[in-house]
Length: 69
Picture (cartoon, rainbow, N blue to C red):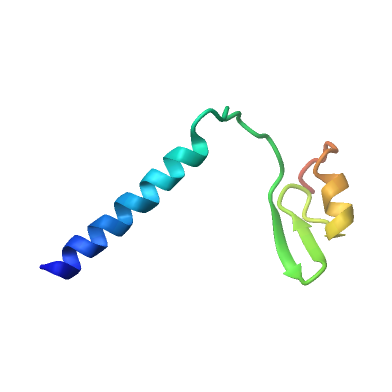
């Protein structure tokens, strides 16, 4: 009985902490691209399937690209 109460209390505490963090914040939608991590410093764009370094992927995320047919 004590274990169930403790578990429920921890869940409630985590939910309360999240509510406090989110209080007063404005959530806006973010539009971006999805990249798959291929290696430690290599990312693949899910739209055009090109490979980029982490820094180049950050810049590519702002650019328009098209799927390769």
